[in-house]
Length: 513
Image (cartoon, rainbow, N blue to C red; front, side, top):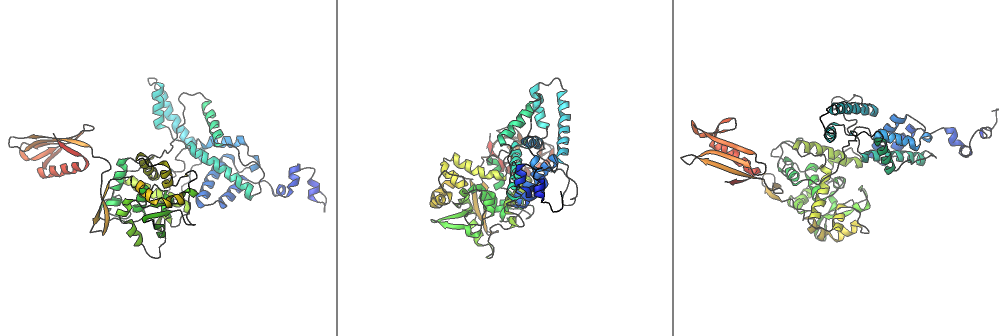
């Protein structure tokens, strides 16, 4: 090229027609994967989505390296998704960092896959070596010990976010190349074909999907009678029994989600002004005002306040909040992006429920929403009413108008979800409390008594009618007739035995036989 010569003219014979048309982009160079990820994170709609873009981007960078976007093909994406579906479900959680140690390095995803594969291979070899075991038994044993990998739903989310990262390049970085490579269905078909290639009768892909189930009556009862609602010892340790009841988000939010079937974020965004009287019915507005983030337009609705919340003086509690406070539950929202509030609060409740002994993989806090809807279905509530209550799409029905017009009807429908809770007023605390919950009928137990010559109890035996387990077997001690031996315990007085029997009667219906 000579001095003063136009570079566009000189280079025109070396470039394609498309490159000549967009010469400035050609000169600027290729858009790299890292540059696109950085842009997608910066332009994300929320901090939560930015975090998700960064996570998917980090996996793509580790697998591909910092390549030019224009070099990515459908086959490249298939290979990436094959890699992603091999990642352990608990990846990134065993780094050993805590509030005291924060500088330990995470293993790469490739390293985590290798560790999981080594674990699976070692255990498989042990099981496979036992020639006495039939094939179904070997598969059953493998299912218990294999490392769960990412659920296919999660793998699909990574594919969707990868496409979103490429779409960002098109929208903000003037990228002209391909931005969508695979449908979710074709991705799953590719993974299935790859898995079936080796024809290995012992091979199967283990994952740990979360199929949210309605809470069992036993779990609901344990929550409602837990120290959260009946009295705890410390604000920071609400699983420990005590005399204190703290009526804040950890008290009210589970009750609201349980009795309204609402989403957690909907409840955490509630303001004092969302408590209204609609057609003479105390009600809550969900997602109505502009600042509320809602999942869909159908989420905007007005729901009657359930009777249990009224009985527990929720209305009086709202009116007692400081005049300058807007949100009902400001604490969970502190320092968090709107989209992350429910996740952060959900983790707090998961810790609390674990201490209470009611944490469950499938019956988690988010499944409380499903519990109410399932109960209303069992009670014969029409589907369009259930959809409106839950904030789901209801055909041509606009939930906001429909629920506002039919709040009286929805009140009677909601109250069909009977938690069988007895509420009484506590003079000491100055507000109503949950006294009992009869959701689950007590199991039965038979009481067998053998009398001595003087009609005193010589032997007392209590046995469960459901499983036959002996709950108490007490016999009087010959040398001390007024004392009893219970199991390996000697010298139990008749009064102590009576206390033990009374305790058993709290959990069982006793029947003298």
